[in-house]
Length: 572
Picture 1 (tube, helix red, strand yellow):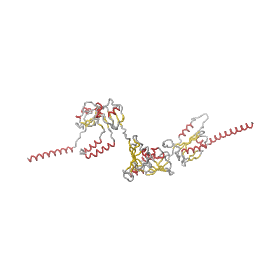
Picture 2 (spheres, rainbow, N blue to C red; picture 1 turned 90 degrees about the vertical axis):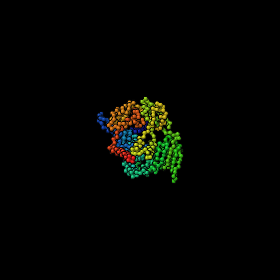
Picture 3 (cartoon, rainbow, N blue to C red; picture 1 turned 30 degrees about the horizontal axis):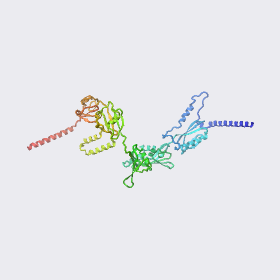
Picture 4 (tube, rainbow, N blue to C red; picture 1 turned 45 degrees about the vertical axis):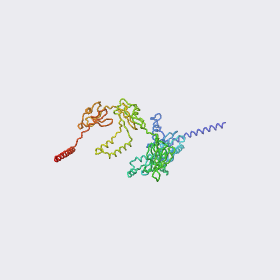
């Protein structure tokens, strides 16, 4: 029994000595640890007297929050630790939490390693971010086994990559920069000597070259070749079509002639047109490049026109989107997606002015009439003034352009164009065509005259005006401007209100211009209404040479008459 008590006492004594030794050893390590000395807080204050006693803590926090002073790079989101490859100049923060609570700024050296005081050198270059974190944390834990350790990427590095092709040079990028970002720089860089020279020396209508967006080659330092297709990246959101850069990359961007390497898609798609062809394109890819099917598309009615090699002609193939998504598309293929059989355009008209609910309203194709949309808008307000109400029609821009061109061509055979002034007037009239639909709103609404209840077209604008109660005078008037409308008053009344005629006025040549039709009328043959215009032209002074010419012509005519008369008398 005594031996057992002695053994227990001896064991307890050894345990106490060991614990005390470890505690003192840890204190000694802490005091001698250069990392601790480097980052320790200052606490040298007089006993009982402490001025700004928390200053070390405050300064320490400021220091830890400003670990680096460097520019940041834009990123798409949180970095994928399995895809990001660590390299020289990456900036990290090493965190120690426990007996020591500090954050240490570290940078990857040009040789690809991290130097950690009291721990040593850890090689991290060419490892994924996750692998690098594991290596550093493991190494630090061997020295500070009782502390929690973190190793966080603070700022991605930047480096230079080479671009070749008709555009050549070096560009600064980062591991979170995609190929598409460089393309934006190249396309809009007007100082790019190679591109500007190439385009200037090849300025021909038939030679329309541009930077490729679908047939780009990215060559890694290891020799790996990656095919870059920016269109396909935005279609699929897969990194393989628009990868991030690494050190040593070579980007080959060719110029293409779209007329030698294209596919065409039209019909019921969001953005029809011709696009650059890329090897391996299928039906799903091409429709995706055209931004997808229109809401009124018939997915089972897709026609592909393909040139027959060696023969002057095409073959047509009927495809279904769901069944033939993987159908291979070849260069020069033309794809047309049909609309649904009962397809009608999404038509609408705009109702403005003195109605209860102004705004856009849907109409049926060739079926909705003027009164229908006025009723949709809640009807007329009390201030509505029908004589000044207007219906504008906006025809298709392409149709209008062709229509004007045809009229100009036919003008060559027009027997009304005799003088240069006729031609100028004709051109002026063509350019001044107004898209007004002649409607008598008073007959339509007050008399229910259905001949005025026209069928509306898409993009029509119905403007129910209010009573302006003004008349506008311009031209050779002393005080050009608006004059209050007074029912029954004639032109002379309004001219007097506007200060009378100016010195150069051509009295007797005045015209009344109607607000709605913009027609010009003789003041004696129309009455002035609210909103009308009164125009007083300028008297044109004839030059003396014109007067002499007229006198000479008259004298010539008189002389001819007299000569004829004398000859007749002599014959008698």
